[in-house]
Structures are given as structure tokens and as C-alpha cells.
Length: 263
Length: 367
Image 1 (cartoon, rainbow over the protein chains, first blue to last red):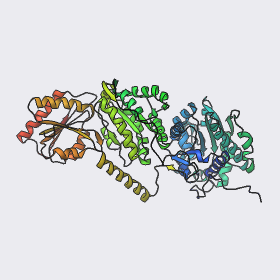
Image 2: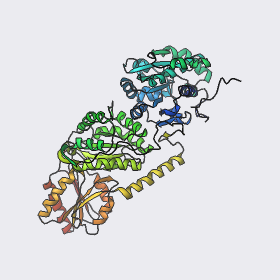
Image 3: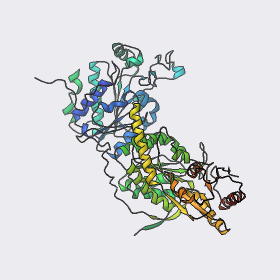
């Protein structure tokens, strides 16, 4: 009998605290699968941010430091500079990365910091109960934009990944989505390339993952996934903004199949 | 052979940190301590270390947090306005029990204030500053030599107790040049840090965090921290006591203690029995030094370049058993020995006249 699906070694068997229909679990699994495939879990240090993913260390079985709101890229910088031969990644939501942590993410990218950033964008503050985020869509109703986000009053959604693409220190930058199995497969390859960029010492790497928040969006899990496809992706198009440089190693050959197994 | 050099305070602090094995520095320029950063920028790469000028003080202290968690011997430095920004990170460092050294070369405040020497960040250093119940180990050198000597101690205490240590100086200490005998170099290899997050290497994952959602669990964490702080209080208080048999005592720390020392000599020359009690650790505050002199002390005069911050700890230590007066200069004005002697004579006169009740205090800041 051939095993086609198993729990990644890097993923614990703990029940997650995430709400039903939340895609954090999928994002965790992608990171865990990639850590397994690249064989790096024993030398990886994760940085957990503030927000729903604050307990990521309960699910991903590598060393972890928990960072203050928005500061994960600075914390990761400190870790990576002490341990340049280890793999360091941050796992941050949009409230964390795109609002209070904009300075830290831009400057980590500008320095070409050899870290990998997993940027979970669900366009809302989930943990604090569904407030407006910098990434909330125009017209989006949240507890702090109860009449819908009006760009005239509350500003426009920030496209962080496009912004970071201007920085020469960036080695790999992509936006994926978690709303369908096909997109999850594509997202997985992006996560993999973002870690490979670090292994190749190429520079800063980030993957933005368009994610759902059914509770914060006041939708069913299915509606939330449809909402990503129909409303979120048009504003935040998926794809590789800064493709990976030609690999110096054989890793593309070894891991080339990537997420197609799950498509 | 010990090396003796004429050095600026900021440079001596930096060089002593390097000799104490510090190999990671994250900072952001601010007067009057920028020379410290510049020294590190020049010297750290040459010694195999890492210097990063962060995008902000907020980022700098969080880089310190990451580096400390990864097991590096790490420091940052700033002045009051920058240290205010670092308070968030300092609270996290204390909550996560990570060792590091933070230097605050104080300037006049509040707000942007000025770049002259001041001691108005005492409360922030010893009473918290950031959120939550925590303590910093705070060392206050009064000479460039002592600044160099206390750097080693700051790293040692910080690592022994897994708690940030602060070296609290002022613009005068940072900018003045004095001969200094530099301490010998220690091996840069950090001590064993089994708690550091350096990759599991196949073992169980380690987590550095300060979040404990269950109240009972957080209470237990806090109780453990408080027990640690109690141990530090019992073991690590340091002070200097001059003329311990005196009737009156000046209480001062840092560079102001040097001026108080001149005032003490001046006053003794005029026949007044005056000693000097100089806290070297501001937290833990050296209460035992007061116990030593309280049986015969007739009054204390606390002198600070603030509106009266350390004087609160002096009053707590004295606990109403003798009058405690205060003399402070503000805004970067440095007190003169003569004005301190005048206050001493005033205090002595009032005590003679019975004008100062044992539990009463009299004070005014500046003139």
C-alpha cells in the first residue's frame, strides 16, 4: 500500500485553536510539509507574531520565539545574525505585518535579510474580533468600519507585496491563495521557493497567502472561500512578483513536484 | 599588563562591552551617546561581531530580543527618548527572561528636552517603564573607569539571572574623557544556554515566549519572576559609603555623586560631619547601606539632576527614621558643590533647631 497523505513530521498532532473554516491550518501544513521536504526542521527557528497565529509554536515542531506585535522581522533579524547557518522564518498576519509592523517588514526587505516571511492576509484583525485592517477591502464591513471601509475616510487597502517588490534586497516574493486545492498547490510551491531562497542565501523572501476569516467576515466557511476568489483575488492578484533566481543547487529537481501532489 | 588609556565615556563603555564578550549590537543614533554606536560600528565587524543600525529604537530592541533568544551576547544603547521607545521590547525581554545589556545615557526631558546631562529617567529605569510587573538590574557608574568596570558586571548579572541589565549614565559620563584601565578580554563564547532557540538539532522544540493566557499560569510565572527579583535584591545590591561615621549623609548616584563628593569635602573642611552614600545599583536599591548608618545618621540630603526620583527610594529605605531632604537641578543644569553645601548647612541648622521633625521632609527643586 502506498502512503499518499500523512502528517508532516514538522506538524504536531495538537488540535489547533483556530475557528472552523480558517485557513491558518492549511498554511501551517504547507510550512510543515516544506520544512519536512527540505529537511530543515531541526535547524529552523520560527518567529510567532501577535494575532491568531500567536500559538503557531504549538503546531509547528521547530524552535520558536514569540514576538511583539509587528516586530517579528526585527526579532528574526536578531536570530539570523547570531545564527546565519540556521533557517529563520516569521509567520505574521496582516494586522501585524501591514499595520504596526510596516517599518520592520520594509527594512528587513531593504536589508536583504536572509529570512522567510509567511504573510497571512485575511484582511481583518481576527484575534481582536474583526476590526478593520490596512488590507481590508474597500467597502468591507468590519467592527471598526461598520458602514463599510470608505477609502476617502479610512484609506485604501495596502498592497504590501507590491510595495516590497521595489526593494533590491528581495530575492523572492509571491502571493498565493488558499481558497481552492489548485491554489493551495501553487501556494505550496511558493512557500517552498521562499525557504529555498534563504537556503541559497539569496536575500529576503516572502509569501503572502490570501486567507479566510469566516467569523470575522460573518460568512460560512464555503462563502469565505468563494469571497476570496471573487472579491479578494481581484484586488490582490496571485502570482510571483519577484521570481526565484536560478537555483545554485539541485533543489528544484528534488522538490520540483511540489504541491501538485495535493492539487 | 593592564592597559591605561584616555577615553571618552561612550567609547569606554563600548570597548568594555567588547572585552566582556559582547558580539552583537543593535542601535539607533541619539545624542549624547551616538559615539558608542559609532565605536561598535567600527570595532564589531573587526572582532567577528555584528553591528546593525536599526530603522528605529523599537526595531533595535527587538533585534536584541531575537539575538538574545538565539544565545548571543548582545547589547543596545540609547538616550531617554530612545529608551522610551525600547520599553515595549524591554517588557518582553523581562517576560521571556532573556539576558542583554541596555545602556541609557540620560539627557534632559521630558519629550525632546535637550542633550545635556540629566537623571530624570530614574523612575523609568528602576520602576518599570514598560508594562507588567518586572524589574531591570540597574547599574549607575560615576566615572569612566567605573563605567568600564560595570559593563562586565552588567553582562554577568544579566546572564546569571536571565534578566536585562541597564547601565544608567548621563550625558556628562558619556561625553567626558578620563584615564581608564581597560578590563582584560574574556572569551566571546557565551556560556551554556540550554534554553536558547538555536534549532532543535533533533531534540524537543524550545519556545521563548511571554504569553500565558491562563491567569493561574501567568500568576505562577509572575511569582517565579518575583522570587528571582527577591534573590537579586538580597544578593546584588552594591554601594559606596564614604565617611560612614558622619552625622549627615549626602545620597547621590552617577556623575552627581562626584559633585556630592566635592561638596562633602568642602563641608567637612568647614567642620560639618558629612558622609556620602552612593548607590551603585539603583535596582536593587542598597537598603542595607542605610541600615548601616541609620543608628547615628541625623539627616540625609539626596541630590539629583531630576525633580526628585531616587529620593523616593531613599525615603522608603529610611522609613521615617531620619529626615530626608532633597536638592535637585533640572533641564540639564548640573549642580555646583557650593549649592549642595549651602543646602547641607541649611539642613544641619534646621536639625539643630529642632525645625526638622524626624518624619518630616523639606525640599525644593532647583533655585
